Image (cartoon, rainbow, N blue to C red; front, side, top):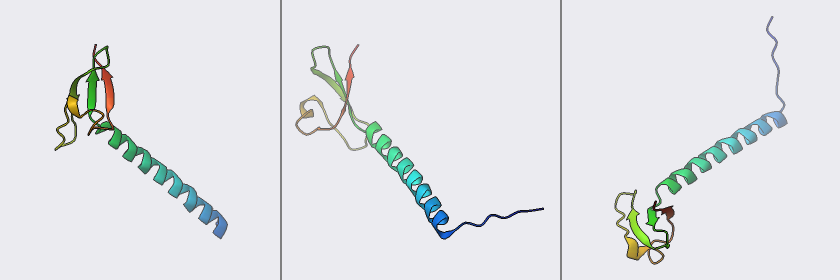
Amino acid sequence: MTRYTTLTNFQLFLLALITGLIAGGLGLAQSMYREYTLLPEVTLDRAGQCVKVTNFENGHAFACPDVDVLLRRYRKVIAQ
């Protein structure tokens, strides 16, 4: 015997709202992670001076003189 459960309009609205928030949050998190991984990596020595810049996005040609002048957002990596 099959038993069906009906939803009220409010329950359907709430389900759609929660599903949309979860999907939007996951999409936003993925977008932010992708943006972060495409940031150039600035390799620093122990004194904090730039050693090299590794660009991941096609067309970017940042170098050490561009750090904090043209290149404002980047990931810092300490050289070993």
